[in-house]
Length: 247
Image 1 (tube, one colour):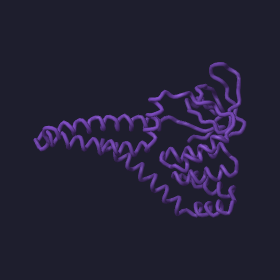
Image 2 (cartoon, one colour):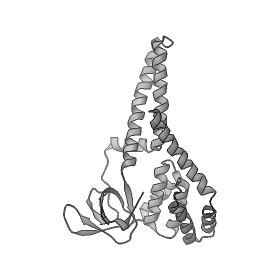
Image 3 (cartoon, helix red, strand yellow):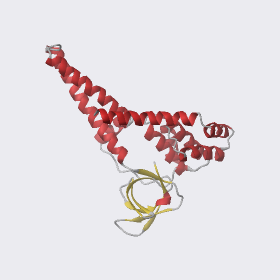
Image 4 (spheres, one colour):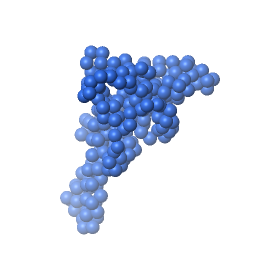
């Protein structure tokens, strides 16, 4: 558990450091100035140069998405809003702008309806990133260990002991389930169709169909220059690798 926590903490520090690097980078300053001057193509080039250099932060992705949105490159705008929210699920501006982008994207596959419980659970898990849930779980776990030690040594007894068990055990289980769910979702590779003429070769029915720019897909497997994906409506098929970009 300690080793796992160290890995999570390292990942968080790397994301924080990446954000600092973006803020102090000449390309970041140049991109911001270009955006303020309504030179959106230059801004997008500057921001994407940072992304391609390995800098990753929610604010960088958010600014990149805004520049793409201004250029009416809605597929790329969705890609970067999704990237921002993947790093920071609580980024309200990215969430709101993503909704605006989705309203402007035509011919999108209709997502399969979620049952109430799953909708509630997904809303709960999206309140924080997987790393944050893991840290909360670790804190709660050690609090539970300390509580049991105090109970064993007689420092906690009676009603206090009962209340402690009633609160800490369910809370630890809920946080464990939440963290595991988030990390399972993080391992799932998702992408956005950024090509304006992508073609899906259907797995089940055969034949081909067009996939609208901006469609969100789940990557199943890769084969040479093609990728098998699942659309939000559940249909699967193959698209060219160049037609999508991973979130």
